[in-house]
Length: 332
Image 1: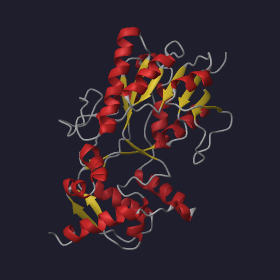
Image 2 (image 1 turned 60 degrees about the vertical axis):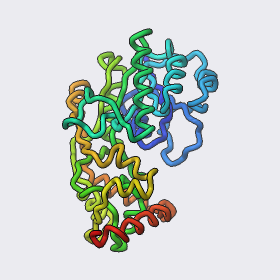
Image 3 (image 1 turned 90 degrees about the horizontal axis):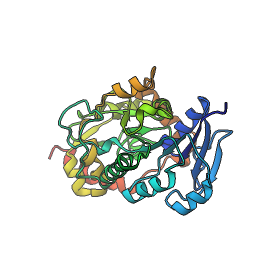
């Protein structure tokens, strides 16, 4: 009997790369479809690479020809039109289509905690999140009307060694190493969940080929909950920086100075992000997130320190920081 076959749309991103590795390790036959332009996270040996623009339905169909897959995991659909195209492309081609949505789609602010899969979807602040909601609606309608075998997965803030999970990225590590103050939104006490991509992958791959998930939604996050002040302090310790000077600035003030940066705060990070993972644990026996953030932070720092060219300082974010500090560092 041949191994089950999964197609990843994407496959080289922060989250999808770990899922590809996990699928290979657990015995899946794996194909990946993308443009073949990323070298940051190479594909594991034995993975079939198919090249096409995921947002060009005709090119995707040409690359796939008449092939059928036990599961398709789509990390590259972001708009309702793309979701509708995916329904047409993969109807009759797969036993399961896994749409990767986002926990940022949940109502902000949440009415109650922890967030569960039944928490209403509504985000008036982030277009990205509204588009993911619209995608879910298209796919659920296709399931109800024509039996399209969709499974919806909602990750929250998931990171790997290449991604610094702070608002300003590596710029903030750079500042903390030099004893410079950094801006933390709100009062620093809002709760947040950071999930290592290897932990997410264990839950995600466990859902592949699982009939009980068809037509349903599942969220996958860590159970570790930290304040934003604690997240900054753990990053500072991992970087060998002195105790950081954290300057608290209202999220609305950050948004007023830099709306594109502030959108991520008003639409997600300023609110508590605490999740109930009972559902994925019931569906995937033995699933648990095992990488605490202090360990993940060390991986992030080690990756950036291994090649100084990775340590990119964003001059615009630095200017935004200095503008905010000029007002709030003195308690104005």
